[in-house]
Amino acid sequence: MNGQNPTAPLTEITRSFSYKLNVGNYESRDFFCSQKSECSWEDAEAVSQALHDFCRKQVMAAVASYRQEIADFDSRSVALRGAQR
Image (tube, rainbow, N blue to C red; front, side):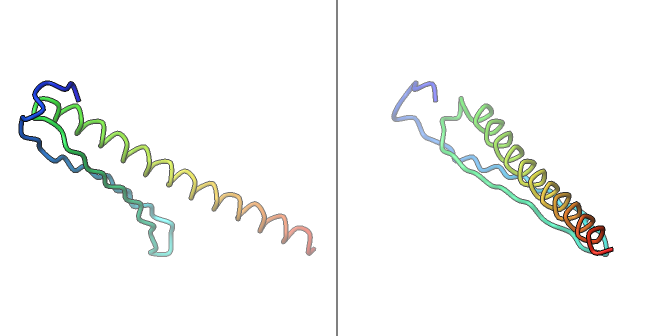
């Protein structure tokens, strides 16, 4: 990252984040993201945090999107039931 010594050994960092959403009736939806990167030892902590933040953001965006899809579906279902009466 900071370009100190190009011949310095690199380390590989892998971070992941998962979220289990209970949707009722003993069902759940799993959301998961994993990323990896190579960096110098000096940058390992910052890179690790950046990878974690990225994974968390991606997973939580997917959870929000899923929740919105369910809410939209429920709204359409209620509207259809009302129109059938």
